[in-house]
Image (cartoon, rainbow, N blue to C red):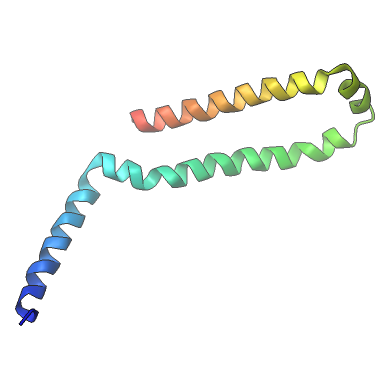
Length: 94
C-alpha cells in the first residue's frame, strides 16, 4: 500500500533540498564550518611555525621575568580575536 506514495515523498524531499541549496543563507550555513576550520588551521600553522624560534631564544627567560611575554600574549590574543571576528563578519556580509 505505501509503495505508490514513495515517488511523491521522494519528489517532495528533492524539491525541499533543491530549495535549500538555492537559498543563499542556507548555503552560507553549510559553508561556514569549513570557513571557520580554515581560519583555525591557518592560526595553528603560523603558531607551530613560530614556536620553535621563540623557545630557542635565551632572552626569553629575561622577557618572561619582566612580564614582556604576558604583554605580547595579550596583544596577540586581541589581534587574532579581532582578525577572526572581522573575517567571520565579512563572510556573513558577502
